[in-house]
Length: 437
Ligand SMILES: *[C@@H]1O[C@H](CO)[C@@H](O)[C@H](O)[C@H]1NC(C)=O
Ligand SMILES: *[C@@H]1O[C@H](CO)[C@@H](O)[C@H](O)[C@H]1NC(C)=O
Ligand SMILES: *[C@@H]1O[C@H](CO)[C@@H](O)[C@H](O)[C@H]1NC(C)=O
Image (tube, rainbow, N blue to C red; front, side, top):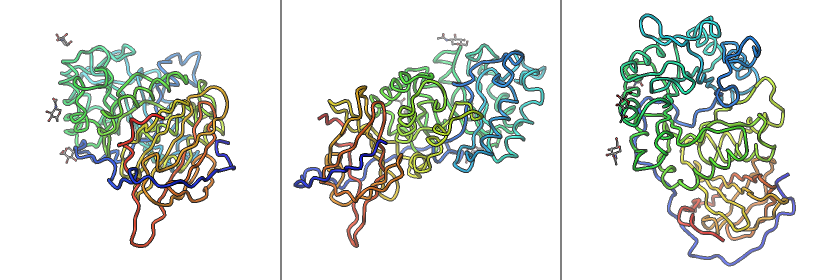
């Protein structure tokens, strides 16, 4: 259990320099005007777990085929996922035939998708879900299937719309900066021109190093609903850490880019696969919630353990991820003790605090006070997201201590206790983000 019952309070003098009333971040830029994804999208995406397994003869239940997507759609609809918001069921690479049809349209592989994508879309829609598909702006997809070149952008957008597709992930293998600069905005226009609301995931920034000046996040927010900034996730804790470090190191650039309708995408949730321990699985889910990340699971929903399911279906974690303000959180502190503190402001003056251990020895007792984390004068209700327990009321200047397991997290949802005529804000930890103990 990450929560320590011997919760410790020490009153200390309030430091007036830490009483800050400014509201946290603001986001003035526009988002892609298709009305979609006002909160981070949630669902399931085939890639990390099932890759380009096309061997349906020897591996029929795991190969990229209409049966795999129907199986996963059934699970999303029947196992409580849909009601929690996991509504996208997304195809990745290796779904198509090696050849376009005689009208120049993409077509699905006839052996692995014998019923075709329109029928799969109906199957998915009948279950209250949405279907995502994959394309690649270039000569070929990463897996070597037909790509979308500049002259086929319009026909591919129309094909996906005609099929009843709800989301497109557009990858960027086998192309170059010139083609991408023209092609990603072109596809955004082409999707809009179909008249069908189709959410648009752009891999563009990941191909340009993810940072300005090569990447223009203002522009991305205007043409894409989400974008992959960085490397593909792999089924390992190292990969999760690498992604978290890159996003945290560059948070001053990335954080302001996100907001309703436009999200940074640190890639799929790998919880329920082979690479993460239980503690690490909790950590991935908590960090993704702080980062306002899309929650696309890439796992086998047919064989998921109860522990993995409980993490992925944690209602308060999902509520934090889906907060309507859509403000991405930040890493506030990297302590010498290798404890890191993350924070995300939420609606109704609530906030999430995450204590993350990078240690590899034993549970670590971390001590701090909310006032040191940018919280203003006041009392806070504290709910422990993983134990489901409400803690004693915490005053901003009381010391608390939490026990954090190696590579694990403790996550709190905090709500100010408002007295009549006096509201408390969650302060402005951005002013403190460079502080290292
Ligand atoms: C980029 O790719 C396009 C299409 O393949 C090609 O015509 C163009 O010459 C390439 N540009 C550069 C700078 O390599
Ligand atoms: C297309 O763009 C216009 C203007 O930005 C917007 O009002 C409309 O809802 C969009 N339509 C679709 C289908 O995305
Ligand atoms: C980035 O894109 C925005 C919106 O398209 C544009 O106004 C701005 O000039 C671009 N910035 C740079 C540095 O190119």
